[in-house]
Image 1 (cartoon, rainbow, N blue to C red):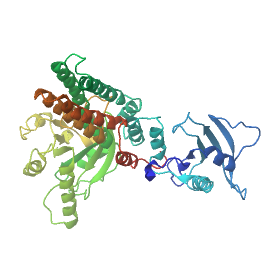
Image 2 (cartoon, helix red, strand yellow):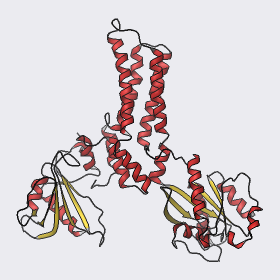
Image 3 (cartoon, rainbow, N blue to C red):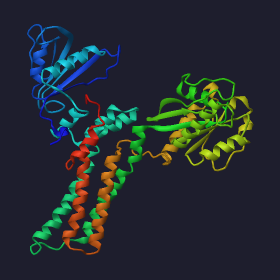
Image 4 (cartoon, one colour):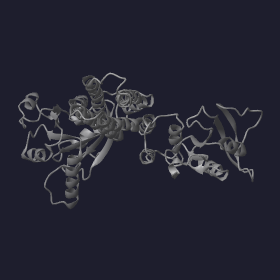
Length: 463
């Protein structure tokens, strides 16, 4: 048995972010059979406080041998099985910062605990039946959520909204398998199988798998965010657009062309979706070596972006420089942003010429903070159109789950082909078992050690 599954000892870790001079509280978490003994060795309670489960005690943490005071803290006790890991858990709620929590953790290690591996608390919760694998992954998504919608989707997974349909699909496959195996074992005592009914049931299962697979792109969008690059010629107002959108002065704004020499980044949330906005250097031919590097970085940022905001100057109209930039980015989902409309007459915009293929156009006056709402609406329309996928926001699968669902769907198609070709019943069961195994890998009912290693290695140590 590998170190990943060596969960018999008592583990300890810092469960909160450790930032110098920031954070009022730091938590050291201990889980395992010796958790209570370690707490009793280092934590001293004044008065007659009762050491029982789900109580918070006040006291002092002292070194057991020297009795040196380490910190004044609270102790939270959660005895098995009513705890996150279904083991005895104690948490020392110390003063924040670096020194207090590190000294308390060191005391726990000296008393017989070992430092937890990444995700080991949640791994124990899974192995002890406290969580299934989809819930465990949802916890990691919740910790790393970058928007309210991402957090809500993670909470839905934690509440079992993904596990329930997966278990139902697997149960349906098991029912079909039982029918087939019963005919294999007791062929003479049972009526023949209804091939058409089995194929119909398999088609229903495959259709539900297809529906779940449709949420993958939206899940990736919520987890990683939408990367948006603002591109255009120098001095068309790209930096002003970023500043107005982010309501900050992230980018330097002057009347001089080529002010932005590098990619400037800002993190926003649009319609519940995290958005990484990149303000790029103006794209043009230049002899300035530093600006030339910035232009090349702009081109790379545009080619890697999920969405490009091609920004032009309303007073200049569509220029040859705009056409050259458009030729470089037209393969990406694109919105044309006509900026500085406050500097031109109203009729000028309607007569402005640009490629007819561009069907998403927004007008802004970034320096006046005008048009930002319209821009966000256009971005969400692009997302909802399917160019950047977004599906039902209550459910979102990840890449691992999508791979398992895809394998289950392939196996079910093989079952249908086997039935159609009228092969013996034993052949029907082979691919059906493959579908059952793939679905079981999603919830953890059938999972390998290597899969668990990949999942939990991405967790932070204290979780």
